[in-house]
Amino acid sequence: MVNTILGKKIGMTQVFNEDGSVTPVSVIEAGPCIVTQLKSVETDGYVAVQVGFGEVRPKHVNKPQLGHFRGGLNNSKHPEVKPRRTLREIRTDDVSDYTIGQAITADQVFEVGDVVKVSGTSKGKGFAGVVKRYHFHGGDMTHGSMIHRKPQSGGATDAARTFKGTKKPGHMGSETVTVRGLTVWRVDGEKNLLLIRGGVPGANGGLVTISKLD
Image 1 (cartoon, rainbow, N blue to C red):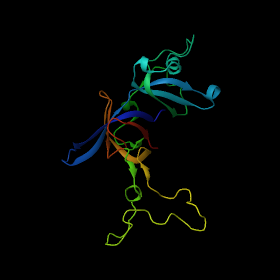
Image 2 (cartoon, rainbow, N blue to C red; image 1 turned 90 degrees about the vertical axis):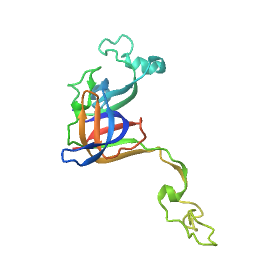
Image 3 (cartoon, one colour; image 1 turned 135 degrees about the horizontal axis):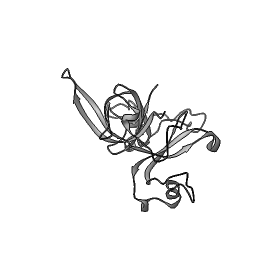
């Protein structure tokens, strides 16, 4: 059974509980995801379900991808599905319960109280120094100090080089971030919405992947 779904981060809000307390939640438009391909050990060497999320006009899809959605030439076993903006593979043990063109919705995968992990692309921060990027302490702020927010020694002097992995200023953000241990607070099957307690990575409108933890 598939335990993962794709979604789009809408934003954050808060909900009131029965006892009057307030819980901050992230609102995610989860699905519907359309099954675009079924992979098996015989044909691909592993078992997985390929799903697509987000509609896109056919003119914005290149010809190889358009042929994939149409099932190739003269392939009657692969029904045509509408092009999707994003494709992802979800590993599973059995694909017999799924058919190409089938819709996977949030209420089919998740229930209130499920513990999940959410992966997304973090916000880009541009070029950042080591104090902001790695939380370095920084140098003295007193008069006469020439190094305030600069990194100190670059490493050992006898090697005459900087070792790989040394923390330096550079591009910050725009990385895949996964937050584990979040709780599904509410599931709205009619609107395809998931309310997840806490914050999830990425900016509003960004693609996220929600997976149920065992």
